[in-house]
Length: 272
Image (cartoon, rainbow, N blue to C red; front, side, top):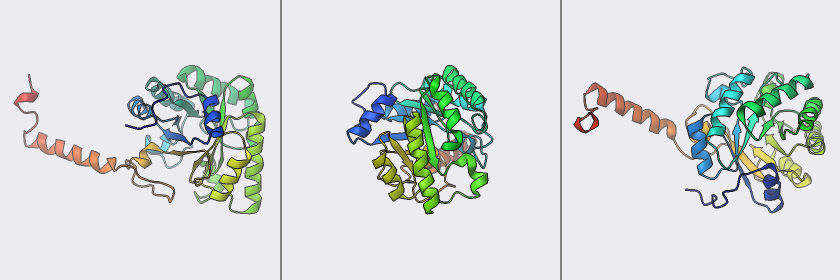
């Protein structure tokens, strides 16, 4: 059991800011269903992200783009039911906020009302400013997301490290400043140079959560299926596997099959 579970108070956006101010790192992990969310929350996780990565690890899609608002709400509801302490963030899926701020607000309101989550996350900087501002005006907390933004993968053409060039790095810094200025409570930086991420974290007063962005930020996030070894087809440099559940599950299922085939299961003690 984690040693970081003594503080049982509900994690809020304000508490994340306080954690940054006192230099305490923020832990964040994805979850998509009740059972796993309950386990993750009980371990002492600070933030649980109901990520649109469900499109990949739960639905088997190649990108996050096919995820719908209804699907995200379903996963969000399931996660919230299993959580007592962690801050629950729900990703706004592709097509629910880009280009139409009224639709963005309607989508965010549905997420909050139907899932009972704490806040939403969306990708982009200046391009989605109007949508973010409209959502914030409704009293809904927003977490930003810059760097590699998977919903824009068709524009990028690959999942390579972003903001290596000076122009893109400068735009990222400008976007991060903008997101803080208009009221985002935190920002995820994905797959950018560690020095750039550290610079953003030092300059901004809001928490900066990294994924493939080095250790100079205020917290870290990973996809649960990746760090637990359930998804073995994804092995970027930034990923640390904390378990090999893929092998454990496969071996357990194979043993079950064997026991059924040989009539070893159920035995006399396992029947009425």
